[in-house]
Amino acid sequence: MRPSSVGDMTSSSSSSSSSSSSSPLAVVVAYKLTEASNWWNDVNESPLWQDRIFHLLTALYAAVATVALIQLVRIQLRVPEYGWTTQKVFHFLNFVVNGVRAFVFGFRRDVQKLQPEIAQHILLDMPSLVFFTTYALLVLFWAEIYYQARAVSTDGLRPSFLSINAVIYVIQIALWLVSWWKPIRLVVILSKIFFAGVSLFAALGFLLYGGRLFLMLQRFPVESKGRRKKLQEVGYVTTICFSCFLIRCIMVCFNVFDKAADLDVLDHPILNLIYYVLVEILPSSLVLFILRKLPPKRGITQYHPIR
Image (cartoon, rainbow, N blue to C red; front, top):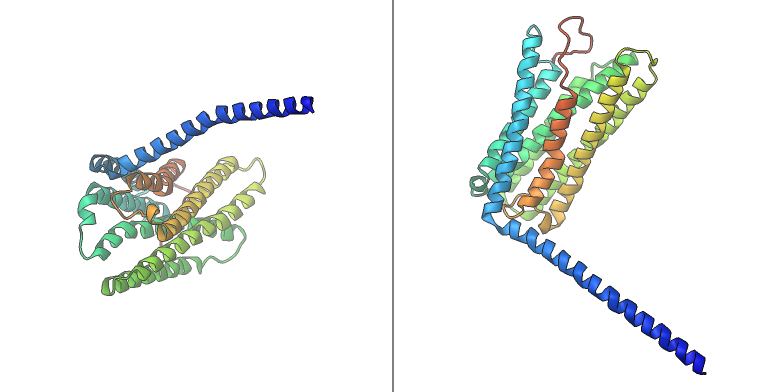
């Protein structure tokens, strides 16, 4: 009986020492988490930090808008004989989206005071719709290349592109008008869910046509001129755009059902910074860099004007 009791005492003492050693660690972790939470709340509730973050977003958007405008001017000087090509429209819309965003964040406090409240939603959400149209142009361009390479008619692609965009804008404007006429929470929720669906639709479009074009390019002979560069270009842009629209879809869904994830308020500046950098600023910057090459002056076979 005595050896057994000694063993029990030994195990008891070892377990108590283990728990006593782990206890300070748990306290430290809990303290660090509380400290981090306090920091997050302090920044969110500080008007000074709110202004700093919104001014940072203004500067970032203005920089991207400037790059898009410079690239548009360079393309125009390179091929002045062509009208509004897909490439020119893409860069122009990038300039518009980022320019409007820079303006909105530059006057974010004034925007928050606008009445009726629907005016705030229009200023904050309309650039997102134009962003969708901007990058849907890439999907259209890739779809045209893919079907042309397979000797399939592309006559219906542009009308389909315009029709889809028209339907999306009409539905969104109708939701805004209903919200203005009868401002209830349900209409705002429907508007956000609709936009989450639009973002998911865009992500799937990039996955479908970017993936198809990538696989088609992989089947080209290894010695094909520019094959490797085009593979990288399509692969990178597809990954970037699919990811940004998928993240936007997920974040907007959280925005709908969780007040802590609301993006349309002043006291969530850190969340605004993370969201807009991930879904607009970083993707736009990367895509503009990847597609920075100017079109050739002559012998253009893949450079289509918007009809």
